[in-house]
Image (cartoon, rainbow, N blue to C red; front, side):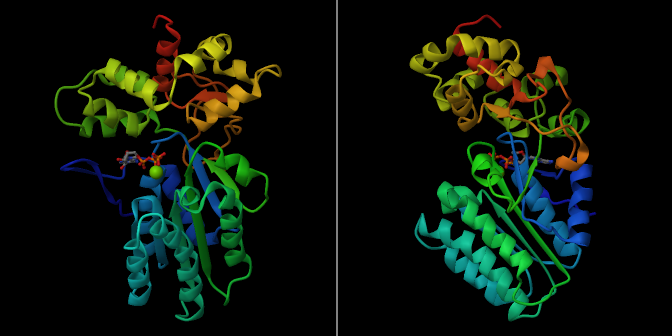
Length: 336
Ligand SMILES: Nc1ncnc2c1ncn2[C@@H]1O[C@H](COP(=O)(O)OP(=O)(O)OP(=O)(O)O)[C@@H](O)[C@H]1O
Ligand SMILES: [Mg+2]
């Protein structure tokens, strides 16, 4: 199967790396269709967008007409010989900020309807990156429902429909999970050997692989962020403290629970753990809460281990990466 080339750093492209199981899952979708829209969530920067781009290319090779949109970045790819579809997407992408985002997200669905109905295509795929940030969180449910409608009540019969949405973990999961309109599927950071290949592709002198693994837990975005900061962990942690708004007020309010969560994320699984803190940590993309069983069928690609104290992974609760945990530890003033 062809692997797409992705821009890792300015001037450095790499092939979509590893994720062999995910690739087989895309092949399954192509063969069997997705009976519900697949909503992929997982740690920020774990590689959801990369997978969607790989899936778009694969589905095209497997005989699908594919519409891929990334509304937030006003990016789209129309793998179809129907020029009109590509033109409409280009027009939408060139609209003013805000309007373009919404238009691309809705147009992706309309384009698929049109490919089926007007152009008689029999195999169509729609892949939407961060749709919910574009349409608004309050409309996330409706958006997925319209994808489901497309699958269940297509304007014409079809041979295959694939509908996949990617979203960063956070509140969307609750919004979608309440309805039975989608197949919520988590994806974790990269497995060690695959991640090693990405590490090796990074130029220049770098810390030993084991150190990088223990810091990033296999998260490709954290790898790149560390590289961009010349592997200065201190700078990286400070940036996280700022970005995640780990302010003195927040830290003071939750000090005791945060300390317990540093020692073992599973502490938050106890019945007396404050719901407000859990919500805050989930919203800030610091932890993953209520993690699925580690059975392959529930996951895109390989599930994480059941537990890995060193990487901050518990059975039901996990830090998104060790660096996220380190940022909270530092904000608490705890020694490393
Ligand atoms: N399997 C892979 N092979 C090669 N590069 C990858 C792979 N996975 C991720 N990357 C690269 O790592 C970076 C982060 O990945 P990506 O943007 O896909 O993550 P994400 O989960 O979509 O993040 P976000 O939550 O911010 O949307 C990107 O530069 C991407 O191209
Ligand atoms: Mg993304």
